Image 1 (cartoon, rainbow, N blue to C red):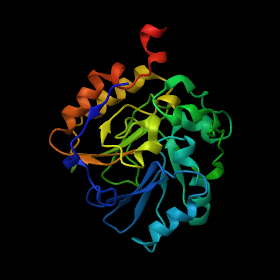
Image 2: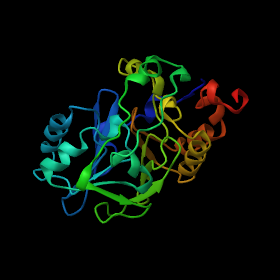
Image 3: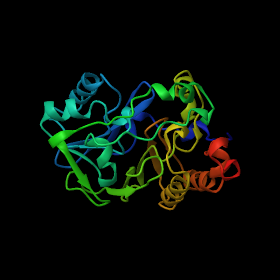
Length: 269
């Protein structure tokens, strides 16, 4: 697959994404904390299995209080696995889009991965990744795209494709976009390579677990139309800069060659 290379000067430190937004990288996935004016905060995503203590220790470094909620961009194992343990310990709700419900209430597994997506070791290992079903029990709260009281000033945008209920978060006041897995700034099929210095690049969502490529293309185009000034994805480094909206539009325009694996392109049907 092709790539869209991003200059290093557009890279933003993950612990200083934007005003009141900080992140933590755990292995190949990011979680984010959104601070609010009343000193409350919200956790975005919940990373890999056995990472709850790592997230708690990180949070204690910037707030003496637990978050008001956990908001999931979607329910894949690398975004949800510590959610129930954290929510139980903090006694808080977990929010997710209503279309993620079957995968978070113990009813369904996500579709089998596309092991033939190519591009790196993550695709080859994908059959080993947990697909659920996960049951978040009474902690789970479902929403349609909307503003949540726990996230004042942020819009929740339904950005499906990677999963049916995938969402991104956007703050219009400074055009900060938390993209989830709608797109990545590292090669998603080679996350382990990224850990040892892969340069920043724009890619589509992780190919081995993306279920609807037409919807994924539309979601990237919609997010580009927001003209974000800074983006922070679930995988890869946060980016900013005046060229960023145009770079995202290029990703949408070249989506088939940049993002869709050869065995899922229309010509492969």
